[in-house]
Length: 126
Image (cartoon, rainbow, N blue to C red):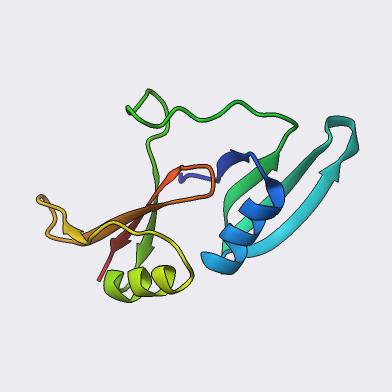
């Protein structure tokens, strides 16, 4: 039918919560602290669409990123205008790659990363 959500385990809950809500602008749908696991679970949405489940766990292992390894490569967000989104994220202190053009679709995109170095793509949909 469709992807329900994507789960992300972060190394620092407060930093990642701030990143995904204040910098990327995702909306908090629900936040739960699970004492038995010493873990937070934060449900995030774009508008009212549930998209990311952010978890904290004590001492999670680092994510292998470079060289690229098997597993989830990146998350991609659809945006109306990549130039505007890139400028917005840079103004909030993020380092963003240069804008590129997808050779198959001719759509513009760029990458940045979250606080745990998870690559994030912003892909122009208009």
